[in-house]
Image (cartoon, rainbow, N blue to C red):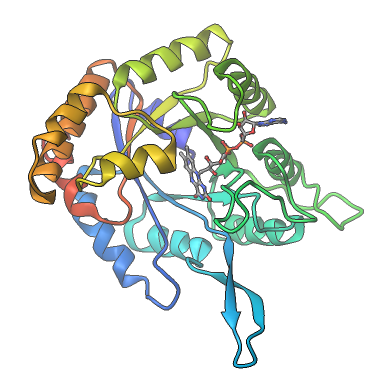
Length: 317
Ligand code: FAD
């Protein structure tokens, strides 16, 4: 079932959902099940699975020469989605990204997802790889989420890459990302909003936000979206801080601010255990306020570590 249908069915009740990462190359799917099992009691109607591109590494040979090789650290999104649907009977939402994939590879992944009965995709551009510094599309890939969306929309119309005739139509519902604190590359929130509206006008049915730690940023973002004629559901994404160094790592990786009150609380913490308690309590209070505001769903970034999310969900669902 589509994410938007789950939201409609809930009739104003806030849903619980979460995102997991595929395990590192060489690990098996049991780690994923171990992360999902404790959260099933909160009845997630859908579970997101992130998508990861390959990265470059440099291998030093005995003769001193450096060889550039590629490695995919977290393969398996398509297979994990199938495993989730089979084991738990809930909808899996695979993320698909532009970076690192050409159009043909993307089409093949989408064909497999459709074949497995997956109705939803979260369409994203993907980030730059560390060694490149800025986002570089694959030579035969897409530069922006809108271009990748167009490929999904074409498949929904039965238009495949190398086929002259119309083929069986896929039926993907598309979700996209939104940034309450602006995407870090966008020159302004207004410009970022223009492209977000383009994604929605093209057919994105819902938005999932980047994590934020100040609910006012989410409320302001929703207001701005509505003023810009963006009327699809906007699902807040939440991530609890769990270590002391998260207070510097998360802002630098995800380009989000921490409110002064949260920073002050963290400054008082002597160790990670104390920081984790602060992070959990902050996330519970954020979640409560968002539920009171009747958000459609609370979507947690688990980083595949579910014990913290379970502690939070127990207080809410
Ligand atoms: P886009 O919508 O393409 O926007 C990227 C930037 O370009 C923005 O600054 C936008 O304003 C601008 N822009 C958009 N269209 C145009 C245009 N036509 N011309 C000029 N500028 C334009 N990354 C992963 O690698 N794997 C994942 O699974 C993953 N999951 C995520 C889930 C969520 C909910 C979120 C919020 C992010 C996720 N990311 C993931 C990270 C995401 O890929 C990055 O934030 C990426 O930098 C931007 O992706 P996007 O889809 O928002 O890009």
